[in-house]
Length: 389
Ligand SMILES: Cc1ncc(COP(=O)(O)O)c(C=O)c1O
Image 1 (cartoon, rainbow, N blue to C red):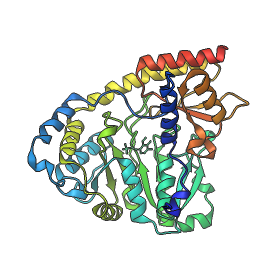
Image 2: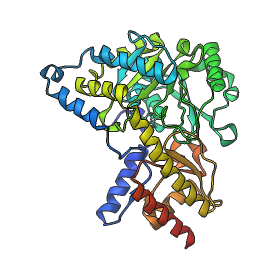
Image 3: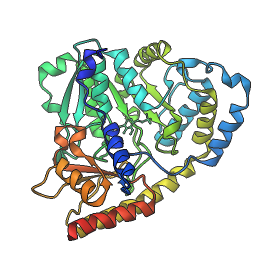
Image 4: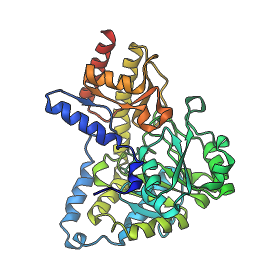
């Protein structure tokens, strides 16, 4: 049986390839340390687990979720409260908030709800690989705007050709950014809003790292910029702030027409989020902001450790201020893939090659700070030894 043509354009998903490589090495007895994936190993807060267990005992929660594709009103109200408290953004839980099965689901269904085959969708290079895949699955055409260090890893919107802007129907943005860790400015978001208004482009700001910030960087929602709700939505998620990647719960907020389209796709695709998970998420949003503070302390400590090691091996850098990733230039004279291979073969340390995020990722690797302290220390020792040898 032949798979659909649209899938042939999608490269193998980076983390599936990495997982296969790691499993093979581990089966051969190699003690591999994986710094390639951004998946917190620290547990979900206990009160959230307790609430899940309590709600799972209640038979009504075993049926299809309340308000299915929209997410239950109590969850949407809690999201609205969280957004007002954390980002100063006012949202109407009726029409301006939707529950999601994680922000990745939102990215995909946003595209299916908004673009027609052949439309152009703007994204960045480097950028989160799932955007490109979703664009292809909708038979649309990605246009990758370079995101360069000299521009603070913000795409230069003035460089997008006029004919592309004319054909563009949607754009993905993502700050704090995976993979670079860069944060956006209010001025940049305002410029994106202006561009979107002028060219009738729907913006999807994917913001799952909104809480993972360092060095006094302020939280920023795209929706807090004047005019943003007229042109776009923001996605967010409980995955990263509350160590809940496996729970699969997130939210979409903002423009009512875009959310209606997204909701129509969901109505016909998934039937929403398990009620017990939604109740547990309410508990997290209401009571567990302390977990975010605790995790920032942990990531800060790990970030310092990696930065110190990089300095010792002459790869020192001034880090960006967001996400639990470090975007690191590789030594001169080598490539992303070569350096990644060296670290794997000589130190059994897995990092993500920058090119997995686009061709402008050449010359970089990405390290994730989501492994336990002891393993990260071990990984840094091994990397240092490779350089000393
Ligand atoms: C930019 C970006 N968007 C979305 C996701 C997926 O998040 P979620 O777990 O909410 O689906 C990730 C996960 O790594 C990500 O890096």
